[in-house]
Amino acid sequence: SRLNGQANYGADVISRITHATTQPGGIEQLQSAAVATINSALDTLLEKTGIDRAQIHEAVVVGNTCMNHLFLGINPDSLSSAPYQPVISDPVTCGASELGLAINPSGLVYTLPNIAGFVGSDTVAVILATAMHKSDQIRLAIDLGTNGEIVLGNRHRLLTCSTAAGPAFEGARISSGMRATGGAIERVWIDQGEVKVQVIGGGAAIGVCGSGLLDAVAQMRRAEVLNGTGRLVSPDKVDDAFPSRLAQRILGNGKGDGFVLAKRGRRPVVLTQADVRELQLAKGAIRAGISILLKEFGIGEEEISEILLAGAFGSFVNSVSARDIGLVPPLPIERITAVGNAAGQGAVMALLSTDQREEATQIARSAEHVELSARSDFMEQFVEDLAL
Image (cartoon, rainbow, N blue to C red; front, side, top):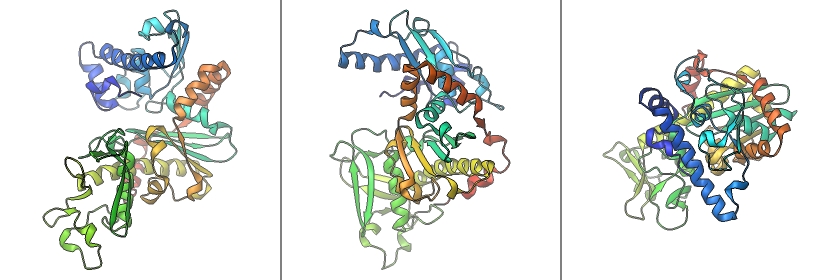
């Protein structure tokens, strides 16, 4: 894995669209940055496997709709405003040398189709890999990230939507936030007033990643360090029944400004009130999207047979924590499954089979997209779903 080189031009797709459309040579810069990131990862793969790049004759690429456009060097301006229409939705085949992808110069690059402006070929790949489009049971797939894509349905009907969840799930805009790398808190437990953390790579905690943030908020809510509105308890509101070891971790001049997750390391890792609010915004957006799809489908939460958590964040999130804070519907925990990098698996399936590529095209054509920005009930649902 690599941090996308496009991050130098913006942390989210809207910032990158702005750069692409307002800066001279912006599209070329972003296209080159994406390809350079892929080529860097490819160099590592070639070194580890001993394979000659001239032996690589074909590549399949999936990503959100904006990334798909930027990878192909297509102006993404139409995605920046309603009705958020992509320039291309169909699959594309082009020469690797045209794009600068460092495989056999005569090799071909194939991109899977997009569904809508913010539901891209990565979501098509998730559906393909999980076989949602073949299932008799109604299933819910959520790809958690800055842009959360949601799919609900079965072989008879598939609904999709996208929510602007923000970067909290990836540790961004969090005071002690970081990517899921060495030193990041990835798990949190509060038991009888004692706070315990699990740090990636062991050793001292230097920050908290998305899964740790989700855990922390769920555990703090359970321990009543947070109330249902997400408000941190104030130090002067703590009574004798409140564990003293937790009370000592609450910071602020009577306002409950922060909570110390870890005291080791160069500095304490603190979760602030603003951090909790960031997570609530992300959580509220995802859950509101789910609620709208359920309403559109005409079913209740209990009719979902399985919830699939996809993506890098979805692979590591604690399902119990996700359910406890209301990120996902309150189903029995055995019906919530982490499916890992399902988009990557779908890309592999398409790489190895032209039949799967055709199936992906049929998925994209048959899926019904629900544009949340056009729904008058979305904002009301979002506000309702902010509660913890």
